[in-house]
Structures are given as structure tokens and as C-alpha cells.
Image (tube, rainbow, N blue to C red; front, side):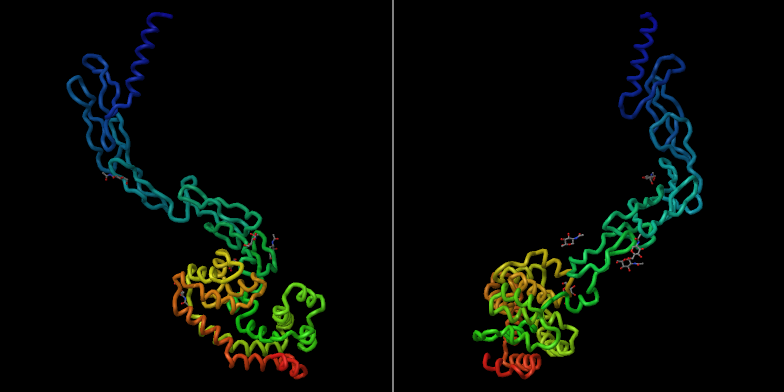
Length: 401
Ligand SMILES: *[C@@H]1O[C@H](CO)[C@@H](O)[C@H](O)[C@H]1NC(C)=O
Ligand SMILES: *[C@@H]1O[C@H](CO)[C@@H](O)[C@H](O)[C@H]1NC(C)=O
Ligand SMILES: *[C@@H]1O[C@H](CO)[C@@H](O)[C@H](O)[C@H]1NC(C)=O
Ligand SMILES: *[C@@H]1O[C@H](CO)[C@@H](O)[C@H](O)[C@H]1NC(C)=O
Ligand SMILES: *[C@@H]1O[C@H](CO)[C@@H](O)[C@H](O)[C@H]1NC(C)=O
């Protein structure tokens, strides 16, 4: 290789090293005009401009930028930059100009900058949701709602929402949703009143009252023949007989009959009378505003199969506070082969001591049990029962009591 070229490369290599070396303050290469020797001068800091290069004897001289001028990095320029003039239409000053920062303008809320103009963020139409909200620099990004999601509005903010899961609320799906419409669940208007309790404590007490204390052959058939309204079909009766103990069969039959005949006047009348009983129960325990932990404590104390935390969470979401306890008891009854709730509750109250449970509530629950088993209530059950089956089997019933 040529000797001179070799020297030049070595020199270049060294000078690159010098300028890229990370020193502080940063430096730059300058040739002293008097001696023509290379010097490493300090650069000027942000907020200043270069007045004089350094010499063998003097350091670099930097002076502050004048008003409305700035420099924002270490540099070697002999002038500051002029701050951008006032902001454009529909922009606001995000940061005023000072010696180290240019003025920053930004589009107003809801707009973004596109070729000098602040344009409105796009709104996603129904069926589309926002996947990236707009910023002052970028437009909204919309995307068609995927399966299971919907958007029923024109919005620059709203993402697609999940279709309501009807079963979580104990409701039936009556119309499947699409990208623009939510699922429609049935029973929506009923839930705040009943919160999906299929048999209330009063109904249960009444149904159980109708269970004969002594073995009565063909009791189920006698009942079926005498109950007004639509008859429970033979197939269902067979199923009840197969599935449930003789103690439980009457309860199951009446439950099914009530369900099939709930629009009949007779059943409505019975339910009205039962409602008086419900009101009393509500008066006793409706004010009990139990926390999640307290409900869990009570559910843990019930015998048999346990009600899980998911059920408690769901109940707290779907039922009003004065219905939550009753709903959970009804879930427990169903889970445990339609066991007698009041018996389960008595058991629970005996075993509840270990939990921090409000005394007023245990007291009210005991009172409720006594109330439902009281002589007054038995009289009511008897009256209702006789009304329900008519007078034909009065003799049968009375001999059974
Ligand atoms: C200049 O403005 C910037 C950004 O607004 C700020 O961080 C900085 O402290 C300001 N400097 C002075 C000297 O006010
Ligand atoms: C959109 O759907 C929700 C949830 O089903 C509903 O509450 C709301 O009223 C609907 N809005 C319009 C504009 O249809
Ligand atoms: C709805 O909720 C139920 C119970 O929580 C769950 O089993 C089911 O998978 C859910 N359905 C959908 C479509 O998410
Ligand atoms: C979505 O469902 C609604 C009502 O259920 C219906 O009017 C609409 O046409 C459906 N849209 C599509 C794209 O199927
Ligand atoms: C039950 O308690 C919750 C939270 O402690 C409260 O928000 C709610 O209003 C209470 N409800 C009743 C009926 O007292």
C-alpha cells in the first residue's frame, strides 16, 4: 500500500475516535487558526450558541440564546433556532418555547394532525369497535367486531363489547346477538323481583306441609287427580317416583304443578297468600346485608354439597342484597336433591359459631324458621291446601295430618 495513503488512514481513524469518544462535556475537533494544530474544544450546551471557538489558552465561549430562540442539544452552531410561531387553528400550546425547547403545538382533544390540519378522529360505526384510540398524532383505528362481540353505537372511543352471557344471570337466550346487537335474554324484567328463586322459603314450607306424615299409599296419584289446572303428565310422575324419596315426592310434584300452572287463577291466588308469608320473611331477614365472606361462611356451614364461591359471586351480581341469602339457600336446596332448606339452615346455625357472623342475622334466621313452623302458618298452609285440592280429599288429608 502507498505510504502516504496509509498515513492518511491512520490519521482519519484517530480523528474518528476522537470525535466519537464519549466525553463530557462533549468535544469537537477544531484547528487553531494561529498554529493550525488540532484542538479538542468543548461543545456548547442546550440553551446557548457558540460565540468563540476554543484556543490553546481559552475555552469555548457559549452565550445564552436570545428570547424566542432555542437550542436543544450540545452543538457547535453560532446561532440559536427560532421558536415555531403561534400554533395553528384548532391547536393549543402544549409547551411554551424557552431557551432549550421549541414551542410544542398539539391538536385539540378529539383531533389529530394530518398534513398541517387538525382533523376529527374517525368514529367507528355500529358493528365496528375501536382497537386503537386516536391520539393528537394518529387517527382512530376501527375493526369489525369478532364473533361473540358487538357494538351498537357510532363512537370514537367504544371498543366492541362481549355479548351478554344470559346463563350467567340465570336467564335464557331468546335472540342471539350479532356484530351490531347484543344477545337478548328472557326473563329480564322478572329478575329484580324474583332473582330466579324457583321455590321460595314460604312455598317450600307449604309444599312440605302437604307431605303426609304417615305412609299413604298412592298419595301422589290422589294429589295429581285433585290438583286443579293442567295435570302433571304420567311420565313426569314416574320420573319423580324414580328419582326422589317418598318424603320428597310431594314437594317435587307440587313444584312441577306450580310451574306448569303459574298463569292459572287458582295458583295465582295461592301465590298471593304465600306472598303475605314472603313479606314476613323479608321483614325478618331482608335487611341482612351480608358481605361476601359472611355469605360464604353461612354456605360453608350448610350440610351436604357446598355452594361454591362462583355461585356466591354470581348471586351477588344478579340479586338485590335482600334476596341474596334466599337465592343461595335455594341453590343449596337444588344442589342437594331438594333437601329441606329449613333443616339445612338449622344445622348451619348450630355450626356457624366459628365465623364472624352478625348475631342479629342468626337471630333473625332462627326467628324465620320458627315463624315458618308456627301454628299460625300451619293454619294458613292448611287453608291453602284445602282450597287447592278442593274439599273432596279433605278427609284423606285430615286423616294424614
Ligand atoms: C423549558 O421547557 C421544558 C419543557 O417544557 C422544561 O422541561 C424546561 O425545564 C424549561 N426550561 C427552563 C429553563 O424553563
Ligand atoms: C346498546 O346495547 C346495550 C346493551 O345491550 C344497551 O343497554 C343500549 O341501550 C344499546 N344502545 C343502543 C343505542 O341501542
Ligand atoms: C356463559 O357462562 C357460562 C357459565 O358461567 C359458561 O359455562 C359459558 O361458557 C358462557 N358462554 C359463553 C358464550 O361465554
Ligand atoms: C343483527 O341482528 C339484528 C336484530 O337481531 C338485525 O336487525 C340485523 O339485521 C342483524 N344484522 C346482521 C348483519 O345480521
Ligand atoms: C349493602 O351494603 C352495601 C355495601 O356495604 C351498600 O352499598 C348497600 O347500599 C347496602 N344495601 C342495603 C339494602 O343496605
